[in-house]
Image 1 (tube, helix red, strand yellow):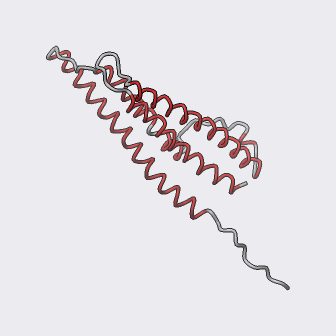
Image 2 (cartoon, helix red, strand yellow):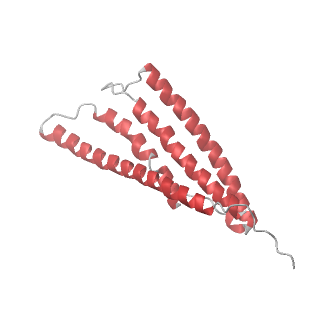
Image 3 (cartoon, rainbow, N blue to C red):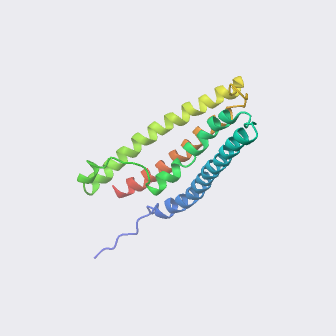
Length: 174
């Protein structure tokens, strides 16, 4: 009986696992930043209400600060949520498929998601760049808006990496 030589193809699981751990650390820090921004906004709201009612001194530019902070807590936690599977999925047809058909549908879904998020990263960065170049500011307090616009492509770029990692995992399962 002839023995065959061991395959030279390397198992990508350790590399994917290492990438998952490193990416997870970044996602956790982004999620922490989003949570802290919500916490800070809550305290700013308390200061606004107390300042307006007790001292007749509202926080200058409060509305502008709230508008600018929305991007932080709306987008920084999205990759973390994807990692935990905390998003809403429509699995009606997906649950009917078994085996390779199921994982092939997952691959297709990941490819669509990668394309959509890639487009959002591209145009989000273009939108940030335009705001930075023209010196776009808020109307009332004239705060620069480019930092909050930069958060969107950065957060979606992290989500794109998470989706790419999931795609690699699904391709392995096919």
